Amino acid sequence: MLNRLSAILSGISKAFAALAVALLAILITYVVFARFVTHSTPHWAEELPRLVLVWSAFIGGVACSYERSHLMAGLLPFVVRSPRVLNVFERVNQVLVIAGLVALGYAGWQLAELTKDQTLPALDVSAGTVYLALPFACAVTIVVHLAQLFSPAPAAAKD
Image (cartoon, rainbow, N blue to C red; front, top):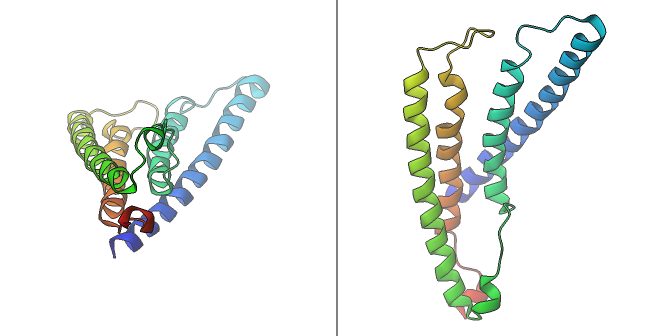
């Protein structure tokens, strides 16, 4: 069930990130057009694209975690040959990533709490809205890593 939830959350996050990047392209194209052709910059020209960029980056990270497509060195398999030992390292890595995500998500939540009463001048929304992307993405990414942690070991690691 955790694997299925992880796959669903990854699909939703990938769709959200794709739509957000498309929106970001549209917003920036419009701002550049307005600034250089009509010589009138929209009042939201900096804040709205930044808000969309932050949310798309953090939510897009969920899909990267699910697909294990984050950049990593991958030197351990050259040093350690035993599939069982590699599986142990993989499990320890998942636990450390989850612990890091908990700490990062908690810090992001505190920052969102601190800034919830401040408003972004151009958008008139809470500044905490920007920072809320971090704890939200961390919570969803924790689900993905929990599913990877509790998934059965590959057949090669059982030998």
